[in-house]
Length: 192
Image 1 (cartoon, one colour):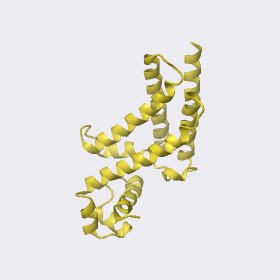
Image 2: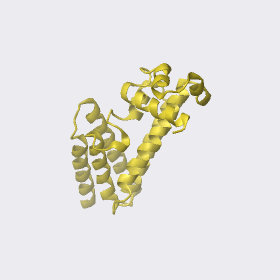
Image 3: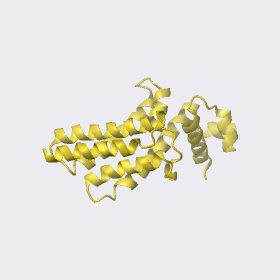
Image 4: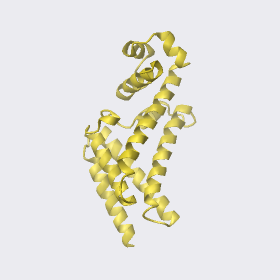
């Protein structure tokens, strides 16, 4: 593994488990086995390293969730597959996205709470991309733009709420519950 990738991977693991402000550069250097000079050759600051971990997690998580949903035969099945994927993640049956410690983007954005901060903006960009993915699946079911927007936002809110419930409350059935609500929401709308 290239040194830069190694630093990002190690930093991500530490930041995800303990928080970005709880982990210092010296711990990252010690656990990655690289010299401080090497770290600063690749990253001008700890914040630049944090930004790289957000990009890393975005690529990793997006690839994983698309892999779990894009093979579905239709938009409705893709939405249900999304919640099945979350259930596997929350219950640590999915090793591609590490053990579950909540949503990295929510966790990091909370530590950079200024909405205009570049790291916060990266986290928001990921959330917009996930909303776009969900919207693509909803638009396979419904054609009315207002319906697509409303249901996409509702499903995205269920996804986010399930993630927070699983992390904060320890509710490992949160994705199953959110999927049931999504099913009812889509069924009701299809019947209207």
